[in-house]
Image (cartoon, rainbow, N blue to C red; front, side, top):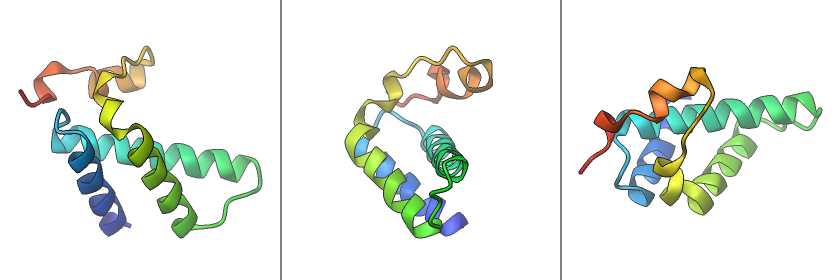
Length: 88
């Protein structure tokens, strides 16, 4: 599993040079967990390969803008909205 996260983290870093490694990894893990939870709740979970494809699709489509997200959720605010993680 760690290998999949690592691969997707590097894909995201290629798409978005504004994210630090830590932020990119956090995004990958958040997207992964959300995708698995959403599909499991709907009864349509089809395993790791499907989740990897979906997260990769999100990264391809939205990865370049993820550093612009401003979360109001306290769980994510510190992780995603910290300027000291951004590369300049």
